[in-house]
Image 1: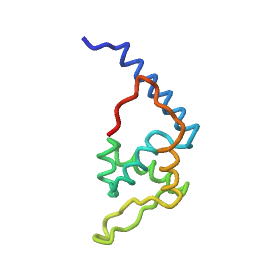
Image 2: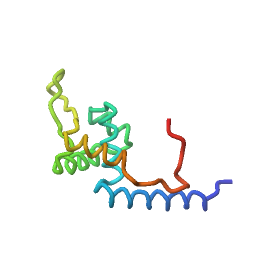
Image 3: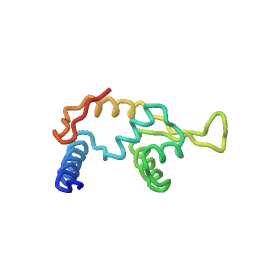
Image 4: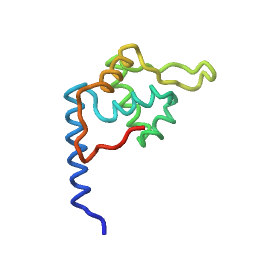
Length: 115
């Protein structure tokens, strides 16, 4: 049987983590995940949407928001002018470093061993 109470506790812990992330960095959870994915080298919007399990329209809204804050930039691919690539701006790279090294701690329920 599935322990629904444990799942609820995880959900509450994740919501608390997201709140602290927003307060500390100004980033939503999806913003942070997108910046991290771009930093790891995922630059094509279609691949980002798949990686983050987002619809193309939701990804576009997140990218629009990050571009307005000068954290990302969409550029034409040098290999195929029909394709766009997402890159981090210097401010975006700094933001990734900020949230990667922030004082935000994971709730005990969300802790895991990082590789």
